[in-house]
Image (cartoon, rainbow, N blue to C red; front, side):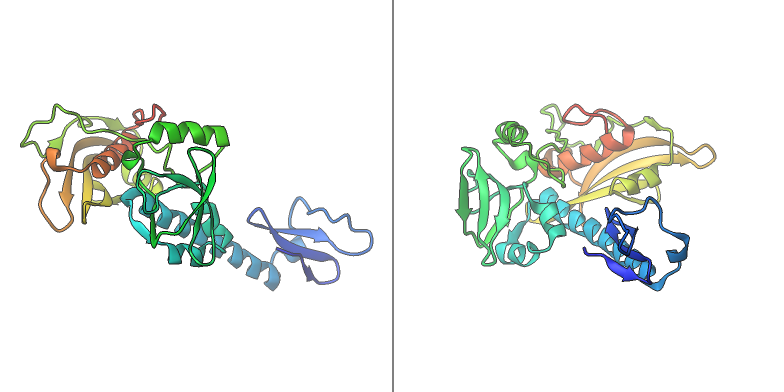
Amino acid sequence: MGWLTVGDSYEISLVDGKVAARSAGPRATGRPLKTLPKALRDDPEVERLRQLAQWLDRHAAQCLARVDAWVVSSLPVPTGLLARVWPDPTWQDALRDLVVLGDDPAAPGFLRDVTDTGDLRVVNLDGDTVRLSPASATLPHPVRLPDLADLREFADELDVTQRVEQLHRGTWGKPATLREHDTVLADFRGTAVPNRLAARAATLGFRASGSQVRCRVWEAGRAVEATLWFDEDYWDSEATLGTLSWSVVDGPTLRLAEVGPVAWSEGMRMATALSGAMTGTGKRA
């Protein structure tokens, strides 16, 4: 944004999300000052800029959270909606370079632009920029990408940076050794977590309530929730993890064999991150 004149001596603006000031007048260098002058700290214009910065931070967090929800649940998003939000640089920042699918589920591409009519410009695995005109687009969860390894390699070649975890999101496949009637996974039971688990869960975007941490996905036409139980000692802030299970929201607990690939992967991702173990891509949570 531009610089606003405040009084006779200073101009203010937002620089890297914070209120900055610079000297005004014929001898001014045009460079921002290292600190905000004391005379400006209570100025109404400065306070308005602070409030704008806070709103922009909230807006950015909301955009990222919404796009993350689209990715986690592989929900089809109307391209008309993408066209409406794309002119906003914050939405662009959250959406650009995510892998997107149009009408052909076997033709993924990296999203580079959305026209005002809802057409998508994507870079495909051949390195070509193509134009897609679907009624809706899907930002798929990585477990639903058959070309995941190729896409990861190509993304590295293009030096792609995704603001929302998609290609390099940790993924877990369901083991073939599950017993048919089991409804709980005990892999994490007894793991000690040395700081307050509920607070850590909140910072990672999971929902904590009572002695449970949950994450929810939409898969196969229904909302499925993974639940990790824990016991916490509030005297020394240490938590001990319990079992992990999945259930249909407002419905029955699922047998492990019934859990879909996305719900399984996201539940394991949650439990692994909270336990401090290694992620599905070999990185520490």
